[in-house]
Amino acid sequence: MPGELFIGLMSGTSLDGVDVALVEFPATSAPHDTPAIQVLHTHFLPYPANLRNSILALQHPTSNELEISALLANELAKLYATAVNALLAKHHLDPAIIRAIGCHGQTIRHRPELGFTLQIGNAALLTELTHITVVSDFRSRDIAAGGQGAPLVPAFHQAIFADSHVSRAIINIGGIANITYLSQHGNVIGFDSGPGNMLLDSWIKQHKNLDYDANGGWASTGQIITPLLMAMLSEPYFKTPAPKSTGRDLFNMHWLNQHLRGHAYQPQDVARTLVALTAHSIHDALLHTLPDEIYLCGGGAHNTLLKNDLQALFAAVHIDSTDSLGIGVDWLESIAFAWLARQCLHQRTANLPTVTGATSERILGAIYQS
Image 1 (tube, one colour):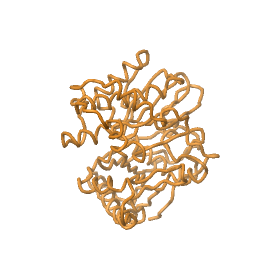
Image 2: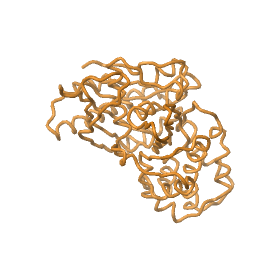
Image 3: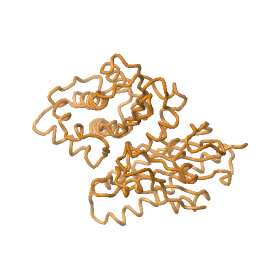
Image 4: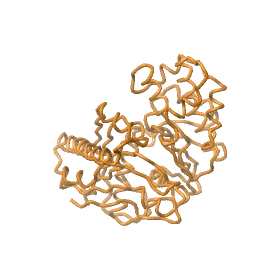
């Protein structure tokens, strides 16, 4: 029987662009079956510099932000549609064969402690531009049920990566680093450990006008500033017990500059220390649930310096990438949102209350029918 085709869209806190994945799922399966997914095609569309700058400007309160947000949501929808249509055109596919698009949207604010999260992208317009049903706004229902609304991908990680013989940690290192711990006994823990790439990305942009530090090359020329590392690791968020989630609302250049105030550190030494911050915060987060295996994904999986730091800290644990499990490191989250869209249309729950803190499981997502 032919499978169901879903498209997943992801544009994360790294603000580099739109990841698109076309995924085939079995046409029928029991609610708790491991989905036999097949990733058919992928596509990446970079954010134009002006769009990235506009999104960054909205991370903090500004004048006329309601109108700016609405206009930017329209712009994002058009870019998402361009990315989807480009993938379909490249492979000569009719939009009618796609069951739905799962669109995460671009996070502008994430304040679960105040009862809201905001991802923009105008899903209604995206439906009009692609002629495909869109499922979006996955986080709000979990927050309404008392949860953090994030991270959501641990449920997907459990569905495809859990193993009854070994415990595994899946570490997605995007702008923010988030961890999924999959016990061999079926228990799942998931939360944001802290900053992933975004502080280093902002720092190298400021000093080198580069979007990211390829392989940690610039950071590797510096030395770890131990007092700075210890000061940053004293951030209360790191000691807060899960469920927890974070983003640019906390970890931003203002936060970093507060730690740098009064010091004349060399820029490359700060860069090296930021890589160490990501590695140490991930390591500390897993101290009490040390896994047998660790798998990396997201942009940070390409950072050789960061991988070496993690391997040094987890000396006795095998560290690899999710490529070795059959899912490319750059596409895991977009594939996850294709899965989340499928869960919604099949009226299946997709949050894990042990991860998000919600009172119980919920069906996630708002549907815009084509």
